[in-house]
Image (cartoon, rainbow, N blue to C red; front, side):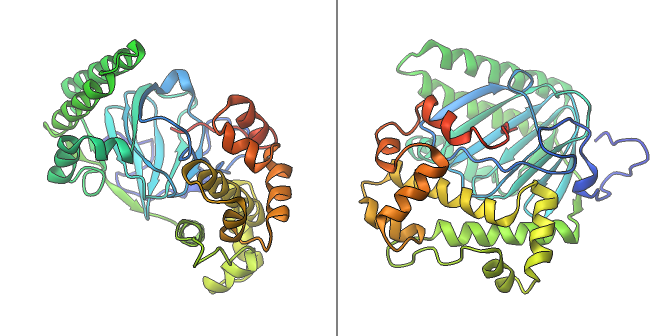
Length: 332
C-alpha cells in the first residue's frame, strides 16, 4: 500500500495531525455524524460528487457500508486501530463499530460507496450467508485491490446506482446480487491494509463514545438514561471531567454536554420514528421526569414538537430546522 512521504508502512499517526482537507470546524476537529433514523434500504453514492469532509461516527447506526476508494488518501480509525488509506482500497464498515475519517489529501478523493440497512440484510438471506461465510465487516474490513478488481468493482457499483435510479420494484433485489458480486471480486488477489495503534488521547475519546452509546443504545422503560453530564462519564472512566471534556472537544470541536444533548435528540428521533410508544414513555426513557419538559427540550433544539416530527420524520424542512445551528458533515 502506498504511504505518504517520510512515513513507514504501519506507522501510527496521531489523528489530530491529519487535517489537510479544509473543514467547517477548526483544524484538527472532527464533526460527529449519524444517519441511522433515515428511511431507506440501500443506496449508492458517488464519493467525489457528494463531498468528503472529516467525520466521527459513533456506533449507533443501522446500516452496513462498502466504500471503494479510487483516489485520494486519508486516515481511517476503526475501533482501536488506524489504517492509512489510499487509492484502490475497499472498506467494509460494520454498523456497530466506532469509525473516524480524516482526510490526508488536499482534494476530495474519488470513489463510490454503497450503504444498506440491517433490515435489508435480514430480507436477503443469501447476502447474509456470503457475509458470514467470508467474515466481511468483521475480519475482512479493509482490502487493497488489484487494478483489475478495482475497475470491476467500480463498474458494479456504477451499475447498482443506475439500477436504483430506475425505480423498478425489483431494483433492490438486483442490487443485493451486485453486492454479492462485489464481495466475491474483492477476495481476488487482495492484500490486508497495515494497521497502527491509536493514540492514548483518542483511546479516551473512543471510551467516552463507547460508553455514551452503551448508555443510550440499551435504554428502555426499565433502564432509562441516567448519565447526562461530563462528570457522570468521567467518573465511570476514572478521569477528571475537565480533562475528558478537553480531549473530546479537541477531537470533535464540541464539548461533552453538546454531544450528550445531540445523542439524546438522535435517540428521541429514533424512538419517535421506530416505535409507537407514548411521548410520556419516551420522555422517561430519555431521562426526563415528565413529558412537557421533554417536549420543550426537543422543540428548542429540533424546531418542531415531538408529535410534529413523528408525523413527518424525514421531511427535508424538519431536518433543515434540526441541523441549522450545527456544522454540516458528510458521511464518507
